[in-house]
Length: 535
Image 1: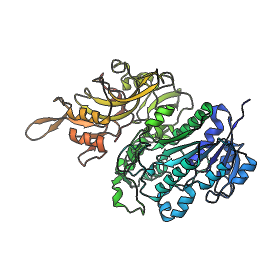
Image 2: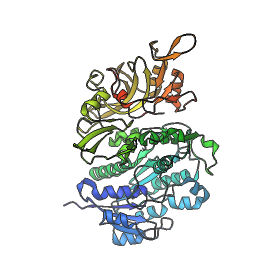
Image 3: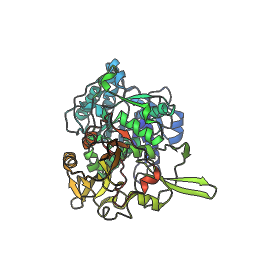
Image 4: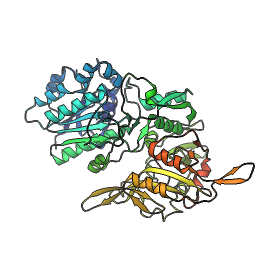
C-alpha cells in the first residue's frame, strides 16, 4: 500500500485554510492524506478539529518560527505544505509595515523546510492580485509586479524569497475569495456576507464603482490547490509555477453588490456607487487588478465559476418574493446545464422539483419550461455546434464557458438579439485550447474582445418597432438596448457599448421590470440564457 502523503496547512484556522482542510479530510471519499495545521490562537478551534479529526494541531509563530520544531518531532517531514497564513488587511499592513513583512514574508517557514535533508517538499504559497500596479486590465503572470501598498509589497517580497530559497514551489496569486462561512467562524469581515447583512436590514451602502477585481469562489481555490497537489504527486517532478487564480468576471464592488441584491431580492436603490478617490482609507489601492487566468485553464483545465453562479452554489438560501427555498441534496439531472440549481419544494401533493437559473434567479417547474427558456428545443440550429460544459463533453469542443459580453437589441418582442459567448476550441492531437468569442446568430468567431467591440460598433441597427414613444405631435419609434443579466436599459448604442467596455452606467439608464412568464416565453431566435456579463 502506497504511503499516505503528509500535508501541513499553515494558517489552517483562517478562512481559506478551514475550507481546504475540510476538503482534504474528505477527498476521494476517504482520507488519502495525513493532516496537520498550524494556528496562531492560544488553542485550535474545537469545531474545526472535531469536523476533520483525526488531525494534528500546532501553535506556530510565523514571525519567529517558534513551534516548527514541535511539528518536526510529532508530525515529521511533510510532503506538501500549503501556506495560507497572512496579514491580509491592507490598512493594517500600512499602519504596521514591520508586522506585515515578518508575517507575510515566510522566512521562518522557508528556513524550517531547508533543514530537512534530501527533501522534495512541495510548497504551495498563497499570494495576492495586489502585487500588480492596477493601471490596466487582465494582468498576466509575466507582467511586472509594482504594488502600490505595503500589503502588496510584502507579498512580492515573499514571492522573491520563495523563488530564491525553494526548488519545488507553486505561487498562487489570488483575487478576492468569497463563499460560505467556515466551520469555526472567522473574525475577519467577509465581503459578501457583510454586503448581504447591510442590504437585508434595508440600510444604504456605499461601494466603489471604479476598482475592479476578479472575485473567485472559495471552492474553486480549493479545487485548484487539490489539482496541483495531485498533478505533482502523479508526475513526480519538481514544480516552479506562478499562477493567477481568479474568477472569470471583472467586477467592481458596486457590481458585486448589485449581483447580491438582485439574487437575494433586495432593493438595488440601497446601493450607492461612489468613487474610490472620494474616501480616504489610509492606504493606496490599485484601480484595476483584474487577472488573465488562461494559464490556470491551460495547465489544469479548471474554469472557475462566474460570480453569480458562486452565489447560488454556495449554500445560500434562495429568497424570492418572501419565500425561502431549499436546495436539493440530490444530484441534478443530466439535461440540466451547469450553473443551474435543482431544488425540492414540499406541497400537499408531495415533493416537487423546480429549477433555478443562477444568472437571473428565474425558477421553472419542468424540464420543458427550462428548455424553452434556453431555446434548446426551438432553436437547435443555433445550438448545433455549442454544447453545455459537462463531464461527458469535457474534451470536445467548442463549448460554452461564460458570457463575455452581451447587448440585446430589442426589436419586435425580442426577435433580434446579439450575444457573444467565450468558447474554447479543443484540438485533441496535440491537446490545445484556443479561446474565441462566438456569435451564435451570425456564427462568427472573434479572437479578441476588441474585435467583438468593433463588430458591435459597426453593426447596422434595424429600424423596426422597438418601443413606442408618444408625444404631442405623433408617435415616434426608438430602438433601445437591454443588458439581460442586470436589466439595464440603454437608449443609445453608444451608451450600451460604453457599459460593456467600462462598466459605467449613465444617469439616463434605467431598469426594466419583467415578469417571469415573459422571460421564458420568448420567440425562436432568443439566445441561450446568459450567465455572466463582463463589465
